[in-house]
Length: 300
Length: 304
Image (cartoon, each protein chain N blue to C red):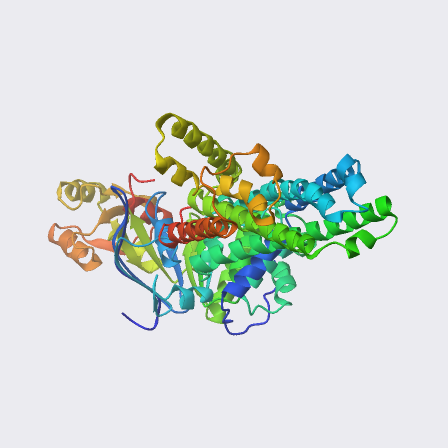
């Protein structure tokens, strides 16, 4: 060790939410596996776009009826985002929380005056920013891909120019449905990470959350078929995974790819009500993350 | 409570279920002091340090740090504290510099030039860009110290800062702690390297089974057991007489034929009077200064 820095008085740092968020962004930015996974999602998008370019309906409809082609293309694109970005967000958000306990860095962060609620909210905000970035890049690349496909099949971008307003509205609602998925996965990751205080446990449980949620929907469906209890139908309407499976179809009016193959609630909610369920889960998971972080001793 | 204290603990206690980790602990660390916090493993040192840092909530008692109550005033007080609790906690996937950068961002208000300055201070400039996962334990310990010093804290809370360091590194830590004291920084230090504690600490506290067993200066602890080394003409006869006394049963022949014996009251003059009363005139009588390790082991016998 060399001579000390020039003597001076103590500094007066002020940990704030903004400072905590800045630190979380640096942590996230430097985590290579997150970006590798995100890159993998974009590769999947490329494969989907290539498959769509070979689709008979799209090839025949796109030049003359772009809305029909869009109806054909959107569900697959949305499904890949929900599944791919979902995995990225579930793992990265639960990792952001669990990592602090696994490495013991929670002692350094909290021992310097960052409050527990500031830390939880900063982690949530950082994960939401990652999700938003993924969504923007995904939407942009999808737009570029579909435009190139249009030019390839129709010889120009004219079909995009004549697409009716309904088509643009559907695109907007598709983005909204993807945003709901981003919000849900982020909240699940942070909530489970805070509850388990474990890197591996948090990541595993976050990944398992939606399969378990969907499995529960199937169990409820089977139980309802046997007992015909209305409460089982009502409970199924509160499950997050099945709600997200049906949401794209509810918002855009298309047959959602996820809703076709994955369980959905037994009660038919409106798009607004489904968004209400997503918002409710977000708030419950956030409240849980804040509550379990607030008073428990840090022994990591 | 005194506003001039850096740390004040009053009746502090912590239970984990049915296990009591810390009990009725009263302690004051003055501002600008280097204070050693000792005790065998499991004595409650780390739990106490965690309570000071607001990481663990006390079950009983009151706790003030730099004049503010913990946990109530944590947000105002803790940004002025530099912690290093147990093993250094670092982001292994980040470089040494990036670890400091993350924590500087977390705190805010740390000048950018401070990071290379600190890497230089702890001797890690050459490895600043390497991932921490490739650092040795000693290098991580040095980086942990840099993290603690990042914002020139008013109070350093250091749990085993010499852990994993070679002798040269331990000496550097000692010099660093002295520099911090000269700057007016209070240091609350736990260490198993008693020789280092002896060299740098103004005062110490020893914890035993979660309770305070001693608090005071190292010097007074070393001389506090009331042992004396006595020069006597007839040492053998004196030893026989001394061993018959209820307070002298562990008297023994020490170095150079001198008798080592405990005073009946802890004071040299009372031992001298007792010997003279029995007809043994002392040629010399000096207080035995034990080293800190001996005193520590005596106070914590059977622990750890």
